[in-house]
Image 1 (cartoon, rainbow, N blue to C red):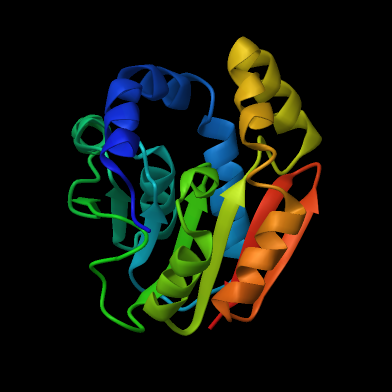
Image 2: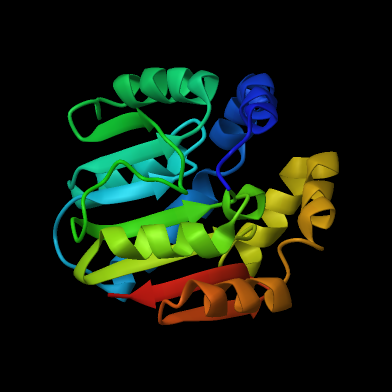
Length: 209
């Protein structure tokens, strides 16, 4: 199952608020994820940020690595803000916003060095299909790291939780559908050789091609 019209309308509707949250709160979190992706090691080459929203993580990955990043989202409104943000950072030559669905990526087989997503996976309609689709796109040695959390370090988690205030309760709203048991079952159904990581740092799926 791919994203529905109501999914798209929802994310179009919250694009402006998410842009404010992303720019004002999530910077340290994006830097930590970029650090982790860098430390994990992967081939040089094109990367993807799946469910990019307004492009914060995609921009961080591109600025850090100097590699091209395709920034994918189902929301036209999110991508409009992402284009503006990316342009203001001088990264238009590296980051390519693309309107697409993670369940059917417009990316050729074995072409991505890394595929990253933070905060989008809880909203995917069919995560097993999405996991297979992401894995299909990875080149030999390519890294998949997708999931959600408020920080890899305790310091960042405290800062993000404090800044989010009432918005922090969104994690409770998705807890039933994005739980370790549910994700393990979805990874099993996907058939990809992935590891489910669960702890204070969040819930993540990591795979290597």
